Length: 66
Image (cartoon, rainbow, N blue to C red; front, side, top):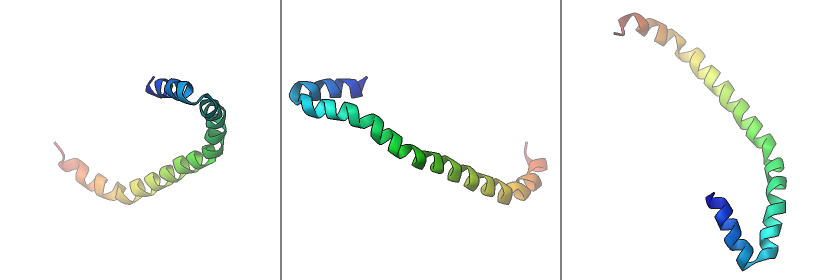
């Protein structure tokens, strides 16, 4: 909602810039989408490596937890 209000203020102050932002936002989102997908994949691989490394320690500590 806040972003929409900012866009409305920009539309009142400078409507060509507001329309350019309205058209450019989906294009920028599409350009950045592969980087987000790679980020999710890298995060998943690093989490898997972390869990594989810490698994023995968690298994040894499990009987002593209350």
